[in-house]
Image 1 (cartoon, one colour):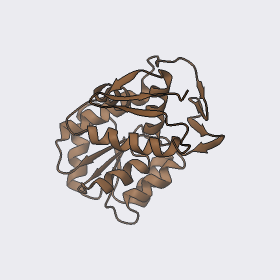
Image 2 (image 1 turned 45 degrees about the vertical axis):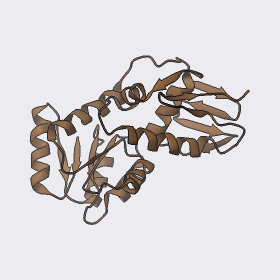
Image 3 (image 1 turned 135 degrees about the horizontal axis):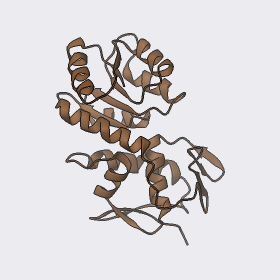
Length: 226
């Protein structure tokens, strides 16, 4: 577990709670060193502050995503929707705003790790799905739209794979949060909406193929155009 945070008191608090839960923790107090540790030490998860010296958290996340799929939990006092969009767009797996309860953060860490290592069968056991204008390769974590690869974050890909594995099935918001993020708590609906909207923009560029549909008052489903 890697904590990249320039507030030493907060780092000590997080280390205390995480080590109490059995995690081994390393830390860095600036973005440049944090990126280096994330690549060299290969932690299971990175807790990454946004406002960091030498290199901010956005840039750390951007560069890290070009080399690794390690789960990233962004930790910041910035609460605007634009900040959330930027974090998720760069590939963050979760976004926690300060102040927060340490126990809640530990619970989110466990949920992210559980999802990352979950070996339970998915709804469709195949490793590749193909629909008109869309191909999804689970082994390579790649989605192709009209023959061109689209850059999906890990959570966007997992959402697409889950929905596309059972075309026509409606998933509630709670089911999607539980299966993709590993938890469902108040306030997380916006996280789901952000990812769904970005997913639609990326895979629905062709007007004849609008795959991700809203089922009003319930959730979302994957629908193949006839």
